[in-house]
Amino acid sequence: MYTVLLVDDEPIAAEGLMLMIDWEGFGFRVAGIYHTGQDAFEHISRDPPDLVVTDIRMPLMDGLEMIEQTRQRGNTDTQFVLTSGYNDFHYARRALHLGVTSYLVKPILDREAREVLDGVLSMIRDKERQVRIQESAGRYAVDHSLSVLVFGGDEEAVDEAKSVASSWAGEAEGWTYIHVDADEADRGCARETARNLAESTPFCRLIDRDPDAFGLVLGWRHPAEPAVRSFADRLLALLRERSEGRPRIAVGCGVKRLEELVESAAGAAEAERFLFFGKTDIVYYDEIRDRTLTFDPEILKLADGIVDIVESGRGEALSDSILGALRTFESDRIAPELISIFLIQVVLRCASLYKEMGGDSDELLLNWGMDQKLRKGLNLSDAGVLLVEFCLQCQSACASLLDRRSGGAIRKAADYLRLHYAEPSTIKEIAERLFVNPVYLGQSFSRKFGIGILDFIHDLRINEAVNRLQGTDEPLSSIAESVGYRGYQQFLKQFEKRLGMKPAEFRSRERNNGLAGDGRL
Image 1 (cartoon, rainbow, N blue to C red):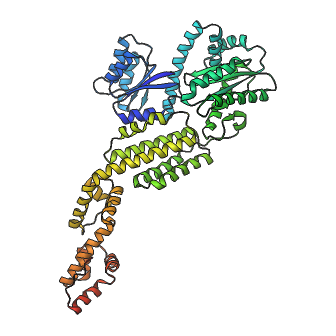
Image 2 (image 1 turned 90 degrees about the vertical axis):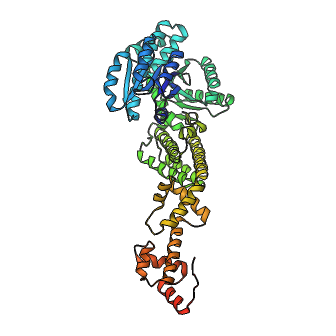
Image 3 (image 1 turned 180 degrees about the vertical axis):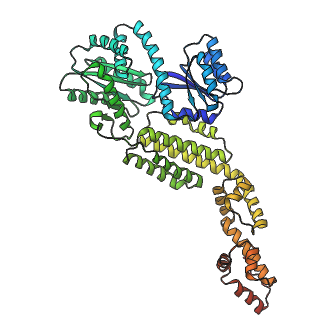
């Protein structure tokens, strides 16, 4: 697998870049995330990566200086991609002579990132392909040629690969590519199991897409389907026998010619997407070729409800909401790529909520192990479990943070209301004044006083109205306005709710009885 460094002085931007792109899918392992050019340069000098994606403007050593010093050290192999704002475009142009591969303009779009990485991969693979073809012989030459035929290359490389592979192909009449998906812990054992089966099967070779992903090229004679299905069943049985996790297989379409293997691999990649839903451990492209997956960004709105539940503290509703969303994804056949975006969006928005409350969002994500848990290879069920786990953890962290801060804030809120009850105010305005989250302020206030903030305000207003009814001859409308009610009907409603009679009745009773009872709440 290729290695990549992500360099940006904004931690959230670097984490977002790591999550937005399926690095493993492109064949990269994130070897480090750095927030200064100096730290990144030390890593490059110590262990040169294949690719560095870096911001231009950073403290201590900016992106251009880091690239220049890397080239001065004699490193011409590491590829660089710059990320920049629109105002940095002229810096990107100046960096071209330093060997910068390309640049991405912030805010980075997924489509543009994929195009740039496709170009980077093409250059890296073309360079490796030339070296390997020159140095390879025998088995390695065949394996490499099949890899070119499966994963693609330029016309010249494909022609040469076809020539080498044809000498091995013998009397096979057609070909199928089979992708193997195994858990990270089982990957080495799964590869060895598949390689042993391939070596004992005519016209079969194991092909590495990268160190963490592999598949097999299977040659067959007519009829093709029984041979392919028999082999796939045997392969899955062996993988299950020797793996702790859940191995899965995606089988591409059958093709007649070696140079068409890329089409079989594309079919396997499409079948692999359906493995995400976890209904079966083998998916054949021929069985799903007429099915379509939906890529409707509207489903991302479901994240709003989940984040609202996290914010409100309703833990009992959280699991139901998340699992309900995942059931919708399954029934509507939402594309796995969009579901991954949904997962990342929920996680980052929850982290942002925690940060707004004064917490350390980077620490929250690090403690949860975001980079490890939102990995490639998750199925829909795994994704649901992990998302519930994170949201509950975030909810608990928010509650703990608020509990540490809310005691003094609640007292201050009550004191403020006792002085300003006659002024129009909202929970949000009070929360902003005290620098606390409005939802948690309301919940904590209710727990401490047994009533909500609005009822607390009404109690204060009606108590003052009672005093004035007993001790003054002010008109009722004037009293209502002076204690904070802009409309008499609202005053009347709240007064009757608390004393069981109208203000005029209360004043008349007090005068008739000549009593000094306070009548307070």
